[in-house]
Structure formats: structure tokens, C-alpha cells
Length: 286
Ligand code: AFP
Image (cartoon, rainbow, N blue to C red; front, side, top):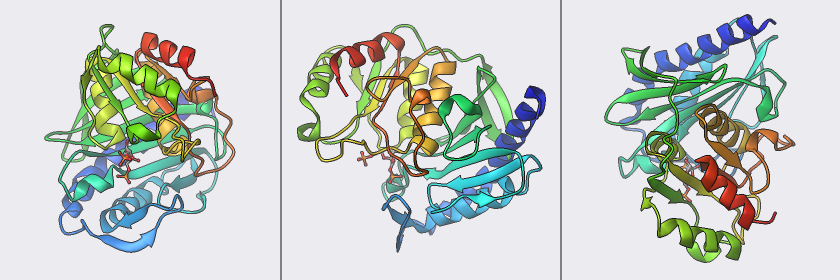
């Protein structure tokens, strides 16, 4: 598949996600309860997780040029023929549904078979279900913010770049669970920036791209592998932020260079302004 063909398929996937947004958003009402099952990562599934997964998978798996599909809500990869590989977090931050806080959808389009290395990404995007439904996408290194109107992507800002002067930070996990090196880093950042933590990776990283800063869900003493998933969260968000001039790290290297071993592999995640991630790496030994 040529570069132009790969980017065209990636754009079709992003269009399919945008087209599903009104239906997914409408279906959140009345689906705030858990359904008593767990996904492959052991997270409690909400009815909304299952709803979003179905509506997005039905559209994405029909696209000519998509060969593999998997989501955070599914155990195994779906074989859809030949072509690119799509990894999806249908409803990121679904724990926020009960409190009616921000949530999102994250989509990653890889050239390689799954589980894939972040460097094989052709495109990535996230939808933010905020006061306005928006999509931020990165294809071929260009980051674009769209408003989603009646299931269509309407670009509102092209070539987005993370502001050079950072403003906000958000750190996941409970403070007593942090490793001492991260706690020291956090103490420095907390005295310099404003806290913005909303419990949804999409909402929190969107603020970092908009205002400059850093978001981390670090390795925890009880969870040295971290909480967030490499294929569905780490790689696509790293691709978008690095395309916007920022950096990402698992504590040692770009998330895009982390070896993909399992579909639902977790990774310590640090994303934001280059200078803040460089400082993080100088403190945190993995
Ligand atoms: P849910 O999808 O289970 O709500 O988890 C959201 C998430 O994966 C990510 O979007 C957040 O950054 C992180 O977990 C929040 O984790 P905490 O609930 O531990 O703060």
C-alpha cells in the first residue's frame, strides 16, 4: 500500500469515527450502569462501553483497506481481510459517565499487525465529548482540531502545536503509590504549574495540547507497569503530542519506541512539553 493509500484509509477510519459520534453520544443516556462483566484489562464494563464499541466497530471493520481491528473492550483481534490495523478505545474515561464528566474515544491506525509498535502508526485521533464534540487528529505529522457537526469533521485549527510555555499538569494514581523519584518530580511541577486532572486521558491530554504542560499516569509501587494501555492509549496520544511538537516517555524512551508484546499491555505514560518530559526522564530510572 502506498503512503497516499495508507493516509487515505486512515482518513476513512477517522471519518467513520466522526460519523458514529452523534449515535455514540446519544446512546450514553440510559447506559451509565455497569453490566457486570469485565473487559480484557479487568476493568468493569459499562453498558456505554459496549454500546460505543459496537457502533464504532461496525463502521470501522467494513472499511476497504482495514485488515485488523481490536478494541479495549475485546479480548482478541478481529480479522477483517488485508490492510491497516486499527486499535480503538471506544469510551475512554467511562468511569466519568456517572458524574457526567469528560470522556472520549481514541483511535490508532497502524501499518503493522497488532500488537504494533507506535512508530508504525499512519494516523491517530481522539474525540472529546465536551460541551462541543471535537476531534484532534494527526496524520502524516500534521495535527488538526475539528468540530464534529452531524457526524462530519469540520477543521477549525490546522497544524496545532503545543504552546512553548507550559501551564497545566495532571498526575494519575494516588500520591502514596508514586515512586520516590516521580514524587520528587511531581513536587517540582506542582510548584510551577496549575493542576488540571479530570479522570479521562482524552480530556487531560487535550488540555496539555491546548495550554502546554504535562500529563502523567506513572508506574505505581503496586503497579510498576502503569495503568494505561500502550496500543489503545499510549501510542496514539504520544503520536498526536509528538506530532504537535511535544514529547512522550515510559520513563526512559518515547512511547512510540516501546516494544509491543501483548494487545492489552500497560505502560507508564508521561506526555507533554519536551522540556518537562526531559526533566522527568532525568529523574525517573526504570
Ligand atoms: P476508565 O475508562 O475506566 O474511566 O479509565 C480512564 C483511564 O483509563 C484514563 O482515561 C484516565 O487517564 C485514567 O484511567 C484515570 O485513572 P484513575 O481513575 O485511576 O484516575
